[in-house]
Length: 168
Image 1 (cartoon, helix red, strand yellow):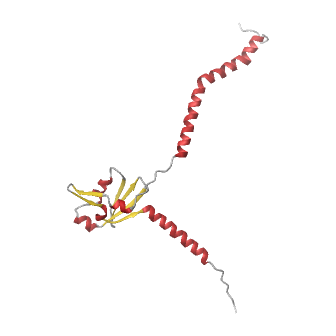
Image 2 (tube, rainbow, N blue to C red):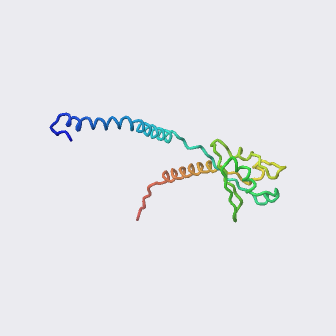
Image 3 (cartoon, rainbow, N blue to C red):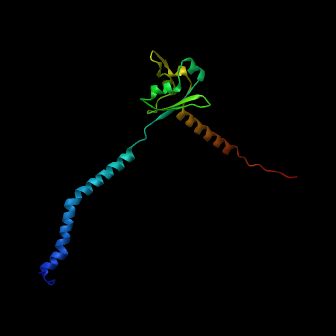
């Protein structure tokens, strides 16, 4: 039999003790999980904010077809030398043979890339600059292009002079 609503104990239990029990149970069981989720969220946020882009540099290596034939090699064989250490991609078609090599450090120069030893055959290694027609640093070219573009825009803005037409 249920107690009468006029009973003080029943009112106290319904209005005060049940909500307190709910809050207490929530605090005990869900508070650690809430703290863990909050900590994971903060860790992810700080790591994404503090993460820097890895400095990469891309080189375009253009090969002379006759030189490759004389050495009995191909861009695919040259690519095999870089495949384990760098990200590479070869291009062949109607134009010259080319190889794109992305290195994971930004302080490399085209000279350092050219000095790498390339295995052409099991008994012969030569520096890359001996078999490559041209080694181009794409980041440097992009920076030069931006500088050239900004210089021409500044020159155009300076050259604008008001001209007056006189009619007689």
